[in-house]
Amino acid sequence: MTTVASRTFTSTPARDALATWTAIVDLLTKGQTGAARSELLAVGGVAASVIADQAPQNAAIVVTCDGPRTRIRCLYDEDAIDGADANEDPLGYDPLKGDWRISLPCLADDLAWVQAALKKNSTRITARDLDEAVASEDSSASASAQALTLDPKGFLGS
Image (cartoon, rainbow, N blue to C red; front, side):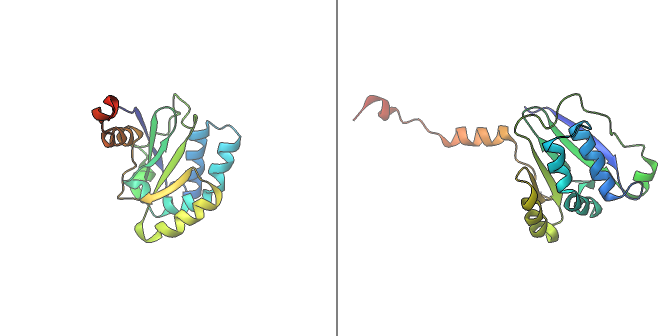
């Protein structure tokens, strides 16, 4: 079973969509400079568009790495102004450790252009339809294991 941490960021109108993405980048990079931060900031306009569309309100931005999975949602309108349900606390682990990936939820009408725009700047940051779940490595591994079958005749020879 995969460990999951969740964070909830205030967004519009408390902060604009790009400022929301920057706050998320600060959380993920722990404020450090480097290649990961540069890659995350390079897709800032596209990520801000997804955030402005309120896609991460009910469907999480999902960050996977060699450690725990991180789910990030955003608050909007009065919930963002109130901020009572926000949790932007630092994570107790490196969410970009090893082979990290980020999946952004996206409105179906925008999915094609968002995927194309992300691909220009990153292979690690992708978009999915907000109604689509992010596949877990555990489930894909178990699916692969189920696809394997043992042929006892192969051990015995012909």
